[in-house]
Image (cartoon, rainbow, N blue to C red; front, side, top):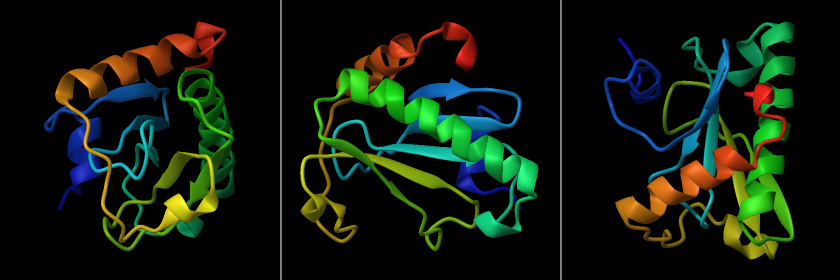
Length: 136
């Protein structure tokens, strides 16, 4: 059975896509801890991140680094935090979360509310911030 992330990758569920390549896909979290909170997933459906083969895990990490750099150009923040929890959706994923301080990383805290227009604009701006364009 397809996960919600697989359905997003296939275009069956809409998302605010940041970037994709042959093996990886990045999109804004619809329930973000902060503005710009992004999920990076492999296009194959694998539940546990460390069950990915070494090449795909390395590619996912490098892809995440490039997405984080683009987020940092657009969203004012001190750092991009990285979290791999993976219990809520059985599809390996990396959270990239713009932070000013580490207290924002409480996944049980109230989430940031952004309108559809704000989410769309943010996704577009982060995508445009990637240089060169060929990295995605």
